[in-house]
Length: 521
Image: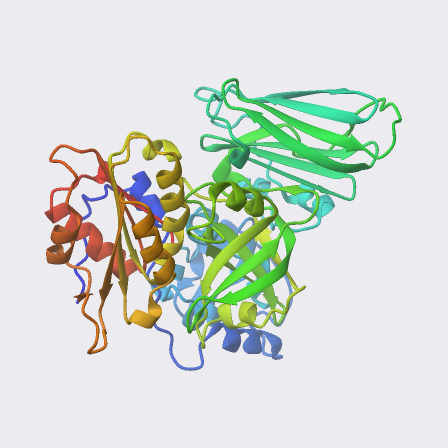
């Protein structure tokens, strides 16, 4: 049995605990998988209990339906009978019961914000709340169609809670004969291209800028079509320039029509996820059950995923939109950094383990070259400033928990002047499960600061390396500082049980919560 760490480490609601993003999945009964739920939804069975008629639900009526055998909940003003879904919920019945008989919007956003609940629970819809809830202002779903997205993008408050702490950006524009330049002034001295996403489709220009924990949105239907655009950032001033290449040399009388949500500045967690369709360009086997997928970004798209951040991939499976988070990796661990950067500007690489009975990965594995998948804007709270000045960095990973470590590894080895040591402690079942083993060994030989330690829980008789599962004994041996007082950061990622045990061991070994960061697998 794995021990659960005491609640004092990391402290509740700390960045470390929030970033874990994980919840324990409950083993489902046979016949209760996602595919089984889709089949039930597609049957003629009444899942509402009301014969299919829609009603208005008062708060008093909603509160009456708060048991496992009669459970209603409200999400963004829509009321669902989730009773028939109880046994199909991967998080277990108790998780659903937290929202029984009440408005579960906030709880839903904390745990499932990326899930398309409207599609998942369509046949369970009871009706609307009789009273208009504030949560309705947050929008209903995300979409790839920018004209629909502007209806859904939340504009609950243009300034929200940001005004007191973070200055709201502003924008201006000017033109030459061949180009339009939109200038966004953020006053953020650490501004970089990874904090900016820009999409252009059907004359709709959508730009989103991350300013600390907030999101600034530019959403305009341009007065003329453009050929392409470029994005430039000035880290010293926080200025962003989006240069639009005119399709002709006409003089623009105005930039275009400001759409709903334009110039809004809200908490990033309140911004509805935006997706764009990306083409599968290649699929390469990494080992017996893991593939490296390369997705090409649309032509008019600027998207660079920051180190340690993830995106959501979305597929429609038998009429249900299914979404899963994945952390992009580099194309290659040992590729020249300039060559790698150029490649990653136009593509996103995902290392995905295929689960035979999974609800998502078998379908993404069946994609043919040229097929499309929807990719969200980047999500995450890791900042490279957390690495700056660190002398020792330890990356503790299990299985595909290795993926967030790839970009960190490449970044610190190529740009950190203070780094003395970076060590990967990589847990797997068998030698065949070790991802990019040859590349990791090659990197060890080419850079003396890097060391990779492979630990197997089910090794073959010929394995001469370390054996076992994550434990205080193994970590005590592996986490040795380059000098007694060196500054250290420990990054950990893997299944929730692995992370929980690792955190307990780190606490027992005397590492503080400030020295630890948890990544979403």
